[in-house]
Image: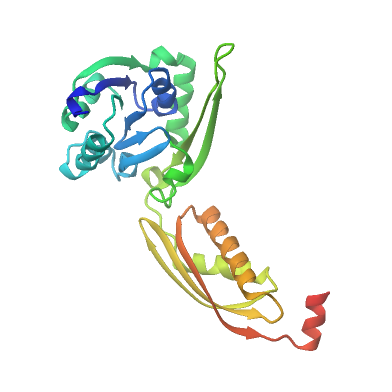
Length: 286
């Protein structure tokens, strides 16, 4: 189906009133599988193209990105639309003008139906959403947390599950979204030193008798996340493959929990074996 055949809907509401929170619900009511929200093209619960405008360093750049002004920003969306050939598309925006510009910039047909936030949310619900945005800097992206882990490495991500009962005999609406808190957008940019990662893994090692010592840690951090390489000395008497797997899982989980950084890879190498002396063996056995 060519782009000219897509039926385009718009979901409109002021920033921070809960559009992204209710986007999938609105799409579900209209049998729409494809959503454009803040620079992303979302199919059901999966991001299939684009990069979130919420990652932009300034408000002006956020708006420009969401409008697809730049060729490199709109090209992946256009290619995905041609590939998936949706019959319906829901565009989210803060005003009639904004959704019209997004549709024009992406080369899709004019909007045929508009849904406004006050049609699906009460004044009290919108006021609560605004308060959370202003006081806590929280944003909602209408996809599960695992979809965003890589792209939002360094952000604080909280899963949000929604269960909304419908009428008798109808299936309830169930969805998972993600609350993001882009710390540096309102508190200034932050950096996590490689020393922090090293200290985390060394602390975990002290809690595992099977790992005698971490002798070297190499960390490389990028926008996509962190890669970590470690040389360790293992304690004699333990299954080496098993303890390395256990240490790797614990280290990755703890780093992601404490730093909010996505661990792209964590490589462990057992460089040598430590053989405990008799008194140390007794302590380990005890």
